[in-house]
Each structure stands twice: as C-alpha cells, then as structure tokens.
Length: 328
Ligand code: UDP
Image (cartoon, rainbow, N blue to C red; front, side):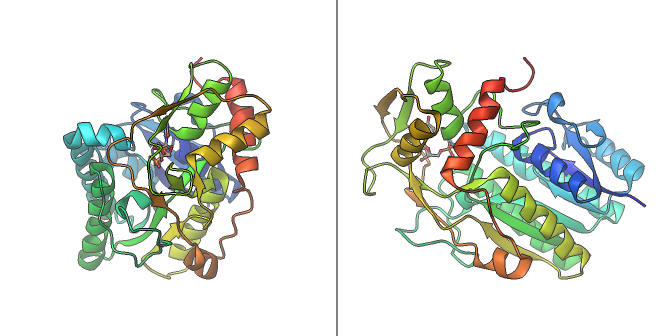
C-alpha cells in the first residue's frame, strides 16, 4: 500500500521539490500549507490540504485522514532581515506552530519526523568549517527559533519516542531541472533570484549587503546547495528513520564557500548578461561565513550531491526564472 508522508510547507520552495522527490521515490506527499507564502500551483505531486499549523483541529483531521508514515516539516518563516525586525513573528510562527505540529504528530502516533533546520543556528565561528558538533549561537531570531525547535524535538524524543532527522541547511539554490517547480518568493529576499531579477530588468540593481566583511573580497561567504540535492537527502533521511536508525543531525552543505561577489560573477557568466550592482551597508543579523562539510550525511546516509555547482544552480534558476514563476 502507498505510504503517505505529511509535508508541511509543501507549497513552498524546498517543500515542493521534496514532494517531487518523495513521489519519485514511491511515497505520496500530502501537502499541508497555509498558502501565506506558498503557491497552490506548486502542489503537483500529491493531495493538498490547506491549513495553518496553529490550527490543531485541522492538523488532527489531516493526520486522521491520511495516516502518514512520517512528517517532513518545511513550513516556516525564513528571512533573517524580517526576523531582526519582528522577532515575535518568528517565535510564534516557527516555534509555537512547530510545537502544535509535533504534539499533533505524537497524538496521532506518527513518530518519524524530518525537520528543516538551518546553518543560521550557528552564528559566527571565525572561518571554521561547521559540522554537526559545532556549538550553536544564533545571531538572529530566525536561527534562534530553529534551534528551539531542534531542542523541542529532542525533548519529545526522550518523552514520547519521537525520532527526528534534523537537517541543517546551508544556502539552498537552483530549481527542478525539469522546470516544473522552482524558487518564487514574494517579496524575494534571496541572493540568486534577486541577481536574476537585476539581470532581466525586473529590478534596477542587486544591492550587495556589506562590502567590508573580513573576507577576501569583503562580502559574506555562503555554502550553496542545489535544491534537488538537498531534497534527495530528505528521502535518504526518511529511509534512515524507517530502517530504525533513530534520531540524527546532518549538515547539508558542500564544503565550498562562495562570496556574494563570486555568485554575481558566476551569474554573469552563466546568463551571459551584465549584473547591475549597488554596494550597500551590512544587513543586520548576517554571519560572515557559513560553510559546512557534509561528511556525516555522505557517510551515514550515502548522500551524494551531484548538482551543486554554481553553474548548474544558477543555470537551473535562470531557466525557471525566465518561465516567470507561479501565480502569474
Ligand atoms: N545578499 C546580498 N544582497 C541581497 C540579498 C542577499 O548581498 O539582495 C547577501 C546576504 O547578505 C548573504 C547572502 O547574500 O550574505 C545570502 O543571502 P540570502 O538572503 O540569499 O540567504 P541567507 O544566507 O540569509 O540564508
């Protein structure tokens, strides 16, 4: 019989790609999404249940209807800048909402849980390559809210036997190479889609947030992972849980760090078009350098990122971008 997986945030960028990967792996992704930031048009690979994570009765009904074998929890607020200005929105929208979901999952007896955490839980670590054991000192309410949810999952594991695979994402980029789904935020705040907007005139220029960081070219360094590689790890994490291997934490990066200026340069080459740039001040809450190894994910899960070159990430994002996104 077909196995359903409840995918919160399945109408969002990463969640929609995860739904595709789950469907390809023989699962039926049940998308649970409020559509506050997600897109109905992104739900293409299984049933859709519109709902908010704060609505416990709705969650209980969805668990009862589909009897999922696991939860993949992507739904979240995810903008560092906004989190600095409206921390309450992040504590409520991420921590309270996730608490509701975790309690509903436990009540339904659905004890395998895959969670989207973030390298923003680490904060600044002076040039260190981060791994699962690096201490977490988040610089902003986004990272702090994700760290709190990690802690909550551990406590529910100890009390109720919940098993969680926690993935700490680095910077996710690119789009489905088939062009069915892609990255589309409104408003957009992420680097690569904003560069593409500047290239094709949808905005005047890309503003570099800070050029005086202690890095070789003065701009922040991030570790970019192709969204399809990232969601592959989630399917492997689900198998890990179903094989009874228990709770675990994995960093999902590639170990390669690129500065903002390097991403701009690659985007110019891939699209063969100029990128109008403005040099602006630092953005509050940004870490200087977030780069991870992925030894644990490779060793334990057998994860092999094969698409995470800037060339392919920008190329796939560009192809999607030229198709115009959702909701048009
Ligand atoms: N960035 C930038 N200009 C922008 C958007 C982002 O210079 O318009 C920088 C940002 O300061 C960070 C990097 O690009 O150093 C990646 O930012 P993004 O918001 O894409 O992801 P984050 O690292 O915040 O998760």
